Image 1 (cartoon, rainbow, N blue to C red):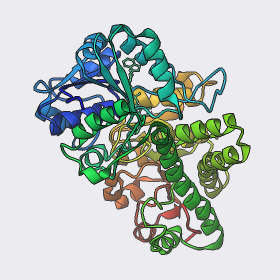
Image 2 (cartoon, helix red, strand yellow):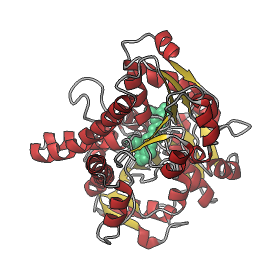
Image 3 (tube, protein in one colour):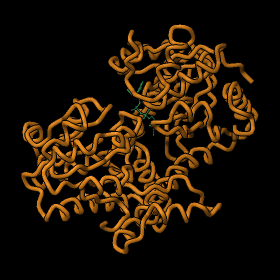
Image 4 (cartoon, protein in one colour):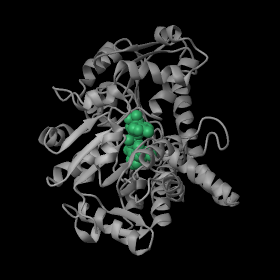
Length: 468
Ligand code: NAI
């Protein structure tokens, strides 16, 4: 197999950046260049003071240890492609907004443009690795495009190598993955390319965790893994509704159920709903795939996972209104957290966006605090969520604060939307004293000690628990 000396990664986002930074860190003998068309993003990756474009615990240290040595960030996509032996394609694959499959299918435009660029500028053999999450058989389209446009004597071997990292724990996940999955054609050339990529991961991942399978299985496994993870959340959330109606406690139920070794204890936390750029998109992608394959029952089954998630968010907003005596018009609601989960600044599909939009519709005033998310990002997300409202109207209703304390001052209710650890260490007595009474806490993340807060005087409303 080819011994890879130079890698280029197309796409310097949440996946390409951390993944290839860790490859560089673990493989000092390989030069890694991460390229992107977005100049601002590349500038931030090259920032002198390491104010990187994404927040991930531990990422700065990895970048510090190899940037300028064997890790480079650049907007020169063509040069990166020409010099590399192996190319990771790690561009975005969002849900299509219009045209055939709108609202379900993955938009493969970015993957196709990157693939066409590779074909146009490559002058030597390349191993092309699909890192982005794509529908089953995308590698086939990539091959057709590459072969139809290749220069003579240029060979392309295509691999699928989906990424399983979770945002917020990306660096530990990458250092110690449950598995690395590589899919290839089962031809001698395909298997050899697979070996070249496996040798890179073998710098730090035990061989038995590097799984090699066929191309189509690899592509489908990524969609399957995300669908099953999201399904677990929707299952526990569906049960949380029953708990609220019956006086059972979802934490106790999850604990009891998770003790069954066939089920396992992880990922059974009820919440206001899952967010993030992947779960919903990948399930919708699977739904679309199932429908295209004339499997409507299969499509309906997976679609329900997304519908349950929407229901959970709507149910939570409604509970806030119900508990606040059926009206929140003119009342101040403090929302703590805007990121889709803790330890990330990513807000894509965050439940907080839906909640705030719902509160705005009820004409409440919202005070918001998040420790990581940039103000400009918040305005962009809220504007997109309420396209019918001018931004000035949104900015009259929503105030962005620089601490939990400031957000909660004078509020009728605190809504915990993201499980940031620091929300546990808030001076809750101080918060209580600064709020209007009765003072409510709505815990959308099963984060705070409800008994402690109740003792202070709060009325605490928790997902998956009946009223105390
Ligand atoms: P992202 O949007 O953060 O990054 C993608 C980057 O690709 C952008 O900076 C964009 O400017 C760049 N790009 C697009 N077309 C380009 C082109 N032709 N040439 C150069 N650069 C180009 O997206 P993210 O979150 O990194 O996701 C990438 C892929 O990885 C998606 O398919 C996603 O489903 C998948 N994935 C994401 C995970 C996550 O936690 N965010 C986890 C596992 C997989």
